Length: 385
Image (cartoon, rainbow, N blue to C red; front, top):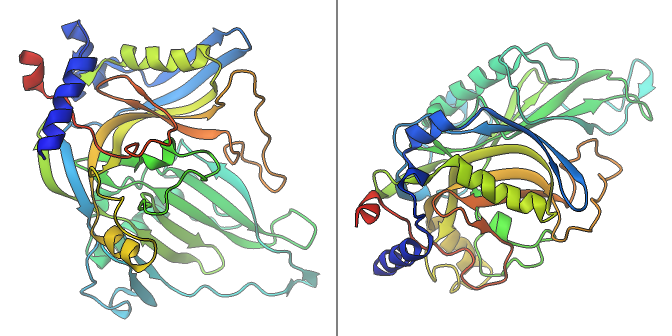
């Protein structure tokens, strides 16, 4: 903990802006931020049109917290809550599932093809929307069923951002060689955990590693943040829920100051004018998780690493996440989508750019040994000194 305090002082000396008005509370920041950013930028290489939703959690405070996995061994059986199976995979994941009927090889005299993914949604999730091929169930009904199952399993659905998921994607069942739905398909929904009402966006490793994953160290623990639910139209119900709950084990500061959104915009604009950002989808404020200093360099791959992962704890630091198409150099062309995908985010150029909410620093891809280690925070008391 002393090391963290030292890092706080380093951050303070390097990054505190000269103007007091650059610092805001989360409530003041929420009032300042527009709901959407629409603007066109002319760069040396190309014109960039920005039309991005901006999301800020509606909370009173922005604490700095130390978190751990919130899953515990189940106290109910699967049958008691109307499911076939409960799987407890340690403190960071617990799941429930029920068997879905297999699709027939033929239907109405037509051979069926393999279910294929087509249809991806990342926003505008009205309760009345319908996403399941050939099934009339609404998104709101799927949310209610999921929340009921979460409660039955012993968890609080308010600790998950179910109404505004990360993504919904659909799978279709069609005659072989065709794309007209013939039987109800199914959808997957990914949603984030929340801590103190603030979404946990990712582990920082997701943004600092190379886009091919080749820079991932063998002894670094990979944390799967999003939870997920499957609604199966052929079953007519939920078939699988994977929960990745988190809980606070220590609060380091009840509230901390944040940079104005003007400062964050300036950082994003720098990436645009440098030729890196080619398109922006969403901009969201939330937590990003960091490792304890020196914590994930000791375990060997295999059982030791798995055991360490189950007991791991992380620091949650406020970050802006910019989901975008991004290139490391200004002259590189964007790569196309795979042949079996209709989603332009399903490319190697889709990136979650992180900007520190207290320093305005862009978090770069890195091979540094401490790239995922927590380096402290700036407090309101620090600003008063």
